[in-house]
Amino acid sequence: MRVKALNDLKELKKIVHANDKVQFDKLVPTPDREVELMSSFKSIFDVCSIDGINWTQNEGLYKVTVDNGDAISIYYIKFTNTQVILSEGRIKHSEIFGDFSDGYSSYQSEDEYIIWFYFDMTDKGLKFIKYNVAG
Image 1: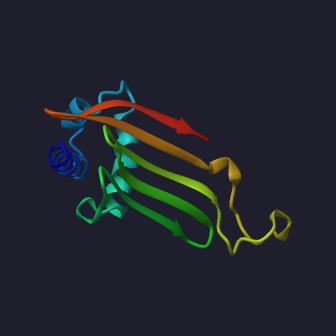
Image 2 (image 1 turned 120 degrees about the vertical axis):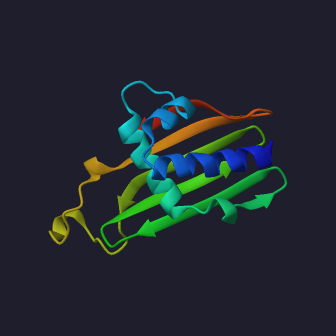
């Protein structure tokens, strides 16, 4: 099932980068939000390497944290025994930001968010279950 799930992720990556909304909606059926969700998937696939996932027993992970001097963002692809979880988000201010009273940054904590996409691994491949958003 892992091999099939990895192949499905690679196919989903192609669909996202081709901006194929019809195929995307078939794989990730969510009413009226496909454009926004495709953007999140694109961000994850641009940063995370599907072929670079490291495996320990039945779990796999490729996780990247990016600090661009303003905000810290996180991206990951995680395999559990039965699921694949993709996530991206802007989680906090940069370590060089300083105190909020400094006035040296335009960082807004109101812009913090994280989104998770959950897929079940099945004999037929990945099956989208749900997504959750915080922030």
